Figure 1 (spheres, rainbow, N blue to C red):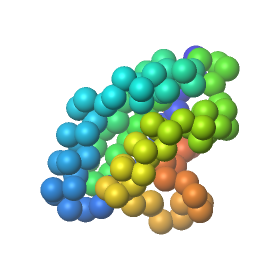
Figure 2: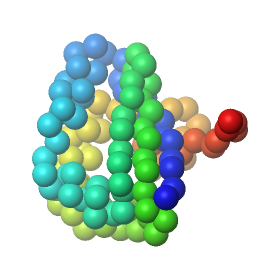
Figure 3: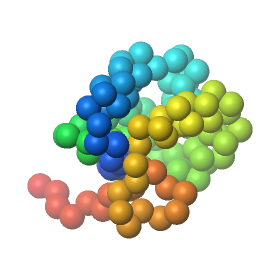
Amino acid sequence: MQRFMLILDLKNESKLIQTYENYHQNISAEIAESIRASGIESMEIFRFENRLVMEIVAHDSFSFEEKSKLDESNEMVQAWEQLMSQFQQVIPGTPDGVKWVLTKQIFKL
């Protein structure tokens, strides 16, 4: 199994943050299936203020490149991403076209 931690910021407006959380309380079955179909075993998102941290646990065969290809061909995922983008802002230094930034592990005990 592989484990990834990614970060993203939300726009720092309390109503937008609450709406974003509300959308994530009950995602559609199609979105959940697209996540699982890519090889992701579990996905959790945590928030502090407007900073989000996402943990992904995925099968050894998982790749972000393959997930991106699957997402690009899925109309439901594209609609979801478009909807979520109104709440999200990229962290300074993030490469163009990237929202969620993959973090680098610097310590493990």
